[in-house]
Each structure stands twice: as structure tokens, then as C-alpha cells.
Length: 252
Figure 1: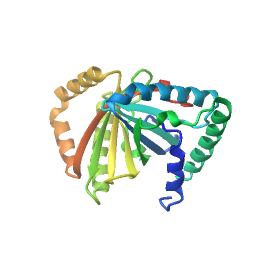
Figure 2: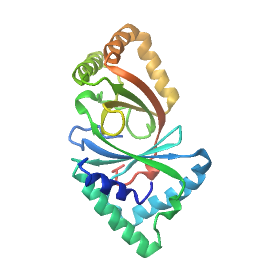
Figure 3: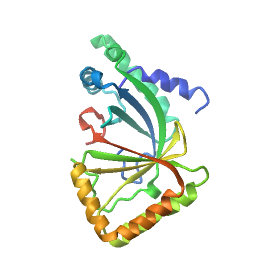
Figure 4: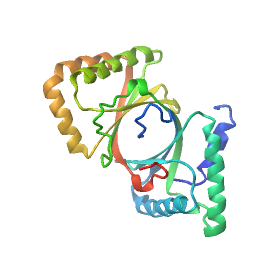
């Protein structure tokens, strides 16, 4: 991740705009930095990013960061926080890290030059529309991730939420073991956008689980999906992986 991203955050914070938490007592808001890397630059990016993560750990960055990589060469960096004011801590701790790394290692982040382009989003976890069955399919070693981006119709959030609650009621009553987390992009492009995040060991395992469920409940799923998607303008899907080796201070 570009180590000077904090300048971008600082600008946002003072311009007036002032994937993996599954417990209700956890942070609800996340700053999300997205980096798009060209295929030809992946090897160079991986090398400089690994060096950066090593320095994060060596000099105690002091931030919790979850890293995900999509199959179309994008990296997501999620930083949990209790509210928007948490961006102050991101700025302060990043500046402190850069000062230490520069003084001790001569590190200035210049190795990232020309390797990626960055965007920023601010998202909210929606625990009321997320579902955990108790036998988690989002646990350790289930690093394969799928994201469904639902671009919502303006003003339809209440009705869409009621449609998702029907899924929660269905899984609660049926006892089937399937889980998801729902997020809302509250600062970014083309909002309102909801993101449904599911995880498994790999794509084959996820398809097998979904196949079994569809064989038993195809009619119910068709009805619930139709009820939800009438409140949606557009749907996009992404696949990828959680990267624990580039995540820091996650407690995992």
C-alpha cells in the first residue's frame, strides 16, 4: 500500500467530507484503500509491498489492517475504526511510522512509484443485515472471498433491508450453515452501494455448498432474490482472497 496514502486521508478529513469483522461488539466503520495494479507490475508491487509490511511489523505501525486481493489485480486495505474521527489516528500513526522507517531504514515509500493507482472508500458494517450461523464458514483458513456489489435504487434501503431479513429468518429457521457480512459504502462513487461478502476455503467448496442449498431450496431462493433485486439498479461480482501475510495487528 502506498505509504503516503495518509496525505490523501488528511485532505479528505479537512475538506468537509468529515472484511472480516463478525462480532456485533466490533468496529462498525472501515476506511478502505483500493489499489489497482497492472498485471505487468504485480511482481514489483509484491516485492515492495512485502518490504513495507515487514517494516510495519518491525516498527509497530499501530493500526489494524486487513488485506484482500481480488482476481482482477486489485488490493483492498481495510482499517476498522469506531467512527469517522478515527481517520485522525490513521494519519498520526502513519506519520509516526514513516518517521521511524525513514530515520532507521531510509524508507520513504518511493518504491511504489508508478506501480498502482489508488481510490478511497468509507464503509459501514451492517450487523443487522449480516448473518452468522454459529458454525462459521468465515473462520481460519477460509480465505477465499466473494463480494457482490449491489448498486441500490435511491430511497429503497428500508425495503431492501426487509428483503435481506427474510434470508436471515430463512437460515435461522432452516439451520443451514451459510454466512455473510453486509457492508454499506457511505463515502465513495455511485452510492448507495451495499456489498455482500462471503467466504470459504476455495471457489469449489463455495459452489458445492451453494449447489446443495439450491437443490433443496431453489423456489425459496428465487422468491427471496426477486424480492431483493427489485430494489437494485446493478449488480457486480468480484472474487479474491484474504491475505493474512499482509494483514497486521488483526489478532489472527
